[in-house]
Length: 379
Image 1: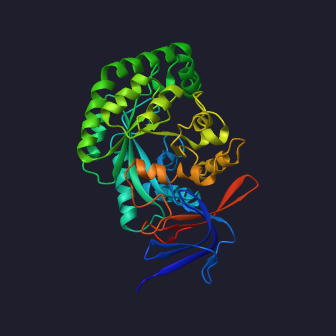
Image 2 (image 1 turned 180 degrees about the vertical axis):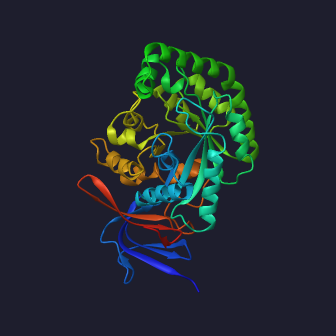
Image 3 (image 1 turned 90 degrees about the horizontal axis):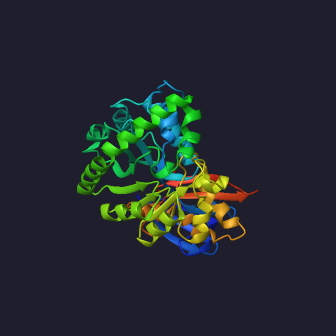
């Protein structure tokens, strides 16, 4: 027997317009969108109904798995806590970032990321999770052990995205040593001499490993159809390398020059939603609002604050040079879904998954009232 759900009296945010009307779900899919009043159904009281948000880059699961230095939480419990928070923020598809390679932040041993990935698969099989979970491998190409870590994922079907990162000083995110010192010296509590040794070690590792490791990971992902992301591109030369590698997503470009070059090349430019909310980058790089105003911002990510993903589109729509809400919502729904080849979600249209979020916008901060994934109420 078919299962039907109707949401009525809603402002339905479609890709090209916002319509007042209702949505019919049938067996987990969107069956129809009708303008005007519906006789029956759940009354949305004039709230917005937007597509379920698609999150491509969040390391928030890490914070639940390791809530304090040296502390490890049960992986299933950590995953469920993370899942509950992202769904309450309107995210119905989340790419959980798992770091590969021992980088500056360190702290994780080989096998830990594989164990978390196994927990994701178990939790999905036992219907423990509210959102759809996929895996994004954050590959620190300057790390000596990144390929060893990658071997744990060579046959994992949950992996749909991999990013190529190099956080060594003088590279990409940290083009100047002043930036690097600001971000890491105080964070790690290093004195001048220890910091100099730390930087020298990281620079040497980048020079030795980055190029061959980047090439190996690109080849491995291309063979399996895994979407590739560049990370912290700063120059046109970085973008040209991304084009040659078939990169689909430019994560957090650090300059307008790199963002424009990526956008013009058809690579989706992604910035952090916290950058939009705060009005600036936490690491001193370009502000995401500048890219939005220049028309070269394609995708937003919650990065380290899940709720920012639903908040940022409303900020961009409400600003002095605000764009229509249906356009800003695409940054967190249709655009990320298309970038990684998820053609069954990210929009409210007949035949697509019934992933939608009821949102009330009041006092400048949206309220997530209800969330459905595949026509099933999950929040």
